[in-house]
Image (cartoon, rainbow, N blue to C red; front, side, top):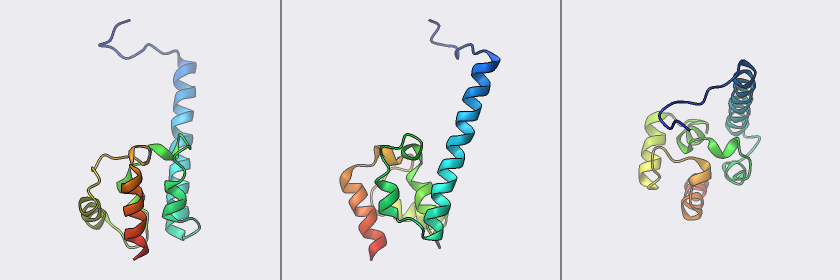
Length: 106
């Protein structure tokens, strides 16, 4: 195995992987839209840690999906709650999850 190079994929493998990636992006966008529209809560999304597509969503993207939250505000919230900028739902600790939920319940 050559560790310095990406794997060589057939056209079919590339096509399948591209379709999977597109479907994953659509699913994450759907969840963010539902959060924005109030159809699901932040707690609902954080409880989706078992969903392999949703758990790859960055916390910053999740916060920005909430109504009235932009980049600057999301960054300040993450700093206040001591959540790393590159953290994803899957990597969020239980205390961080609880703090994030409590922050938006105030």
